[in-house]
Length: 405
Image (cartoon, rainbow, N blue to C red; front, side, top):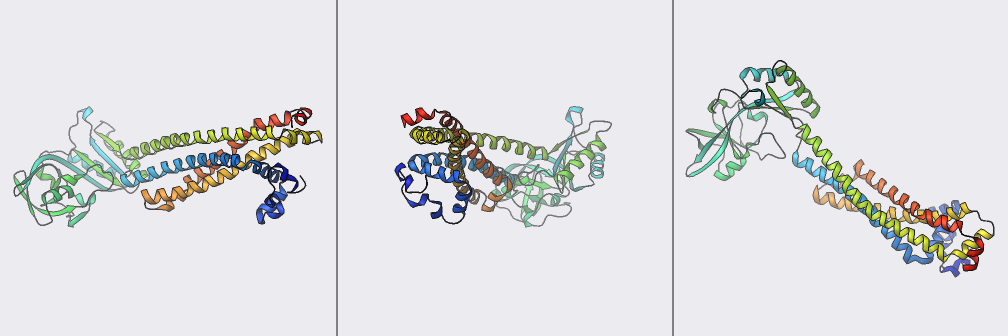
């Protein structure tokens, strides 16, 4: 084992096994850790078998890291589709307590309690027939005084206070070929279209895309069916919800409040479970790769029984034999883990470019954590797979090893 040529009888006679022939950092690394040099030499004796073991590790790391990043991409895509929904509240009459509508006094108390809100929009709604010429459609009609606090217009302008005219949802406008300035008939009344709404992106408590918004006095009923409250952030929405409960439900449970932040929390929990499930599936392939490494190490120790017997006969300790075998297993895990992590990172860039049109999302901390964990799992699995072969090789009787070798 003094030089590369001496080792040639074991099946690797090229100069690449010599640390002096290994350039730069690797040369210094092999000089500092001779066990790594011996591990590389031993693994190179059967390159095909070693390459297949490394391939198993690569596939396992690629599966774990890629599936973890895939779950993160799904979460980001869902968040984009839902939009910033955690800052909205829906205040409704408590039907269980016999409260069927909200009064004007209730609306005033909600507005006083909503000091941190950006908009408080009381809503009435009804179902009516909307017509333009011969085209007719039964739609939901919303009565709102300040729809501009919740929605934006793609055509025309939404009045600051809707006193007359109507605001038409984008889907209904497309169906009836409406634009600002046209006249429509809602029930028994005619309205001039003041604006057509922009399409609603994400999720909203009230989506009038297929309906019409008119002044609240034109919708039948004395009370209000619901109030939509928006805040600048989810935490402010939570504080506003608590203030509304305190202000209206202290003596009587008059209102129920639906907080959309609970939806986002449930979405986060769902994707957390999904990520764990996907990573678990990917881990199976890495366990299979560990079995492959176990086989490689066992076969290697059987083929080298004579060599190990010589080492033991000249005084090499058991722990040194164990260290040599474990170094080989660790080297397989390190090489396979590094290649798998690089491939998974590339797959993440491609995936996020296709799904989110932003490949840099791949570099968010959670994805980098998946890469580190997958690499660490590969290394630990490889070392554990080498424990039994290392113990078996170190525990063999030197005389029997020499005889069978």
